[in-house]
Length: 129
Length: 188
Image (tube, rainbow over all chains, first blue to last red):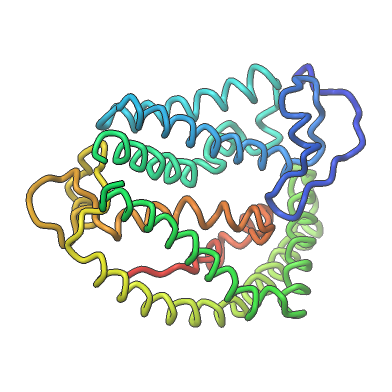
């Protein structure tokens, strides 16, 4: 039994299939928030991944960080930060969502492509423009 | 702003526009039809019901219960197949449009370095990233590689923002039949 998420809260309806209401984001940073709707939580993981992709892409493009190290670094940060978030901070029971792997791969490919695009744009703009 | 960076931004813009165009065509031909709405609601309802049933079933569950689940799975498979058939109309229309568009963009950007890659791609990817480019600099990026990356990143996000992405339960249950709905963008 994972701790820290057991308060009862009225369900917060999300917009259809993927977009999130503002009220959902207010739960994101609360370690004691309840996540009755699995899809809602998975959408939060998804959008967190996209945000990380943008942030890391910008930083890597500005530094610049080149080569495979940049790609590996992104993968580690993306997987690591989210793992720490749902495992240590929220203390989610991963089995409820299909296991750690399901949570890790949620939105990963899309975020990877987004990271590549942002990285390429900033790298081209700052170091080759 | 250099020509190369202008090309980079232009390709991102083209990708956003083509993703919106694909969703627009799909909305006109598929999403707004009653048949699609009905099938989608049915599939989502059945998927969630089936998922819940599978979670609660035990090893010692009777044959009758297991047979009931099999029947529900079969029904869901049929509905998923019907849903895919409905989507096929838009897939043909999008495929036709995009073949023409991609032909046009390929000729516009032929031989042009549209961005610089901060890495050297693996050799089998260079066929795409260095397509139709002169020279041996593997960090030169061609139109098609950047377009593919943009489409991969932008299309699903647009679907999620617009609320058009299929539900996870439906995608999971559909995985055993035709797989998740294929991307409606096409590139040659």
